[in-house]
Amino acid sequence: MRRGLSFQPAAAARLPGHLRAGALRLLAACLAIWALGMLSPEIDEDTAVVVLVVGWSVIGAGVLVFFMGTQRVLARLDVPLLGPSVARAAAVFVALRRIGLVLLAVAFFLFWTLIYIGVWRSHPEGAFKGLEHTPTFSDFFYYSVSTAFVSPPGDIIAASKGARTATMIELLTGTAALAAYLGSFLDFGMGAAEAAQEHGATTSEE
Image (tube, rainbow, N blue to C red; front, side):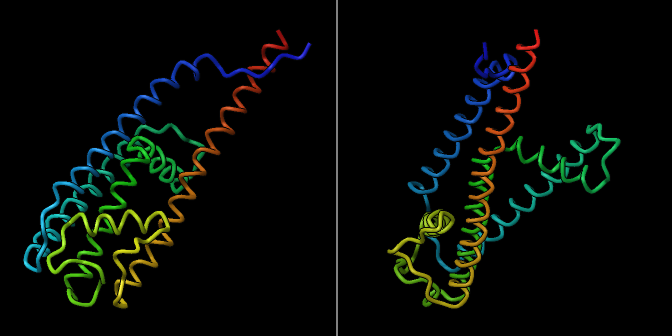
C-alpha cells in the first residue's frame, strides 16, 4: 500500500522556531515603520543635509558589518570542491538568510528614502508634487515603500526628471526584489517536497 508523503521529523521540529523568528522580525519591522510614520520630524533644507549625512553613514557602517559577517561565514564554509567565486556567493546567501527578508526590506526602503530626500534637497520646489512646504521623513519613507511595491502613491507625485528617474529605478529593483522574495517560497516548497519524497522512499524500503 502506498504511503502518503510526510516531512522529516527534524525539519518539522525546526519549523516552529523559524516561524517564531520570522514573526519577531516582522513585528520589529512593523514597530520600526510605526515609529518612522508617527514620530517623524519635519525636514527643511538644512535638516535634510544632516539626515543624509547620518543616514548614509549608518548605511555605510551596515555594509561594512555585512561584509565582515560574510567573510566570517566564508571562513567557516567547508566547500573544497567549489571555486572561490561560488564559495563567496554561498557566503553572501547565508549571510542574507541570517539577516532575514523582512529586515532587508526595511533597509531597502530606508535606502530609497535617503535617495528621495537627496532628490528633494537638490530641487525642493519642483522635485515632488503633493508635499508640504516642510515635509517629514515619513513622507519620503511612505513614497519609498509604496513605490517598492509597484504602486506609487497618488497624493505624492514625482515631478522632476531626477525624481521620476529614481522612481523608475526603484520600481525596477523593487519588482526584482519581490520576485526574489516569492522565489524563496518556491525554493522552500521544493526543498520540503524533496525531503518528504526521500523520507517516504526510505519508509517504504523499510
